[in-house]
Length: 501
Image (cartoon, rainbow, N blue to C red; front, side, top):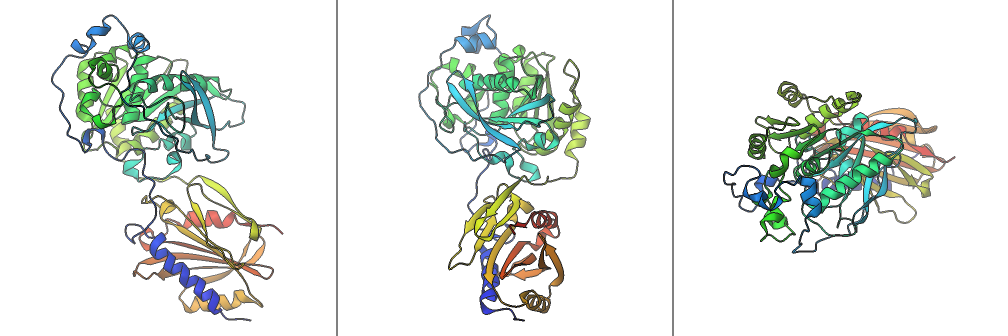
């Protein structure tokens, strides 16, 4: 029997040093590259000065050139003039296998990329929502599969987590798509094209396709509701009324032409909405925009709700969960979704919940090892001299266990019953240790705490597996402030461990 070797002690010390810089939350100074969500500021609270709109009846002089035309007619006849040809070629990460597919959908400018829920394979037709995220970008990335804070969940993931199929479309000019950013004009055509694509899928019910979005995405969704009646219901969070008063630095069109603004401002076309459309916003966000739109129309298809005391982001997590259930219950021939202020307020008062993460399989060929871990985790390989040294952690800094946990995997060769020696060492360090069997192999399972060089304390779950003469350890860490919140995640990863025999 060997006691813990200096090399193995060095490995554990190295792990503790690494968590000082890679596994701390704001409570422990986590230092990682942050992938920012597509929108982190309120449209109405941008860094530029916001000008309050003058009092003007909806559809007044601004629509003089479009007299007698519906929004669809005016939109289709209008030729926008772009002052800037902005686009990007940002790569699109592969989506979680079996959960979403990366597809192309045809539009008037060519094929555009989208994530779409995979076929459930049950031969049934299912409801689907097209979710348009906030921000002014026209692309997609792994943002829908992250786990943001409860008071800022812009992902729309509540829908597919509840069983509602979901489509995340990119638009012209984004992700190498043909065309350029058109700032709320051509993107409306792209949303209509996304509907046509979704309706063509054999596992989607074409009569139960919904549309939703937040902030810029909410404004795009509202314009789409004014353009087409194909959607069963539309949900617009934080839409603006008149865009000339918001985020002018993002505009790519000829800003000297008032008609360009009119074609992009929902308040002038509210009477053209033919399907149930729900406008929702916090009183501390773009609430004034919603109130002006409410006053501008008597259209019975438009329903407005202000969430008192909430900002631009807080309504998303609780209310998208409520809407997901409403969609699943909306099974009749005609749309039947209704909302009351009371049930919205009740939803806002619920206790925050964070869903289980989307998992993906990781293969470590040199060890014959496979395991599942959160899709958003990235793996860093620092292996050398025949010794495996891997770090798996999230690039995000969200205040949740999936973003703040870290897993280290190391391997080494040892002789004799090293498990027994490690058991004694860990017990001396204050760990609770028990014998275990992992993937049919002898192992030990230890829990305790560890302190890094900054003095931060971390909860530690340590698994050591013997596979022949090779020992593989799995070292899980999370800041002590999360208590036992990460235990379920750690156990899920441990249960997925498999070695080729």
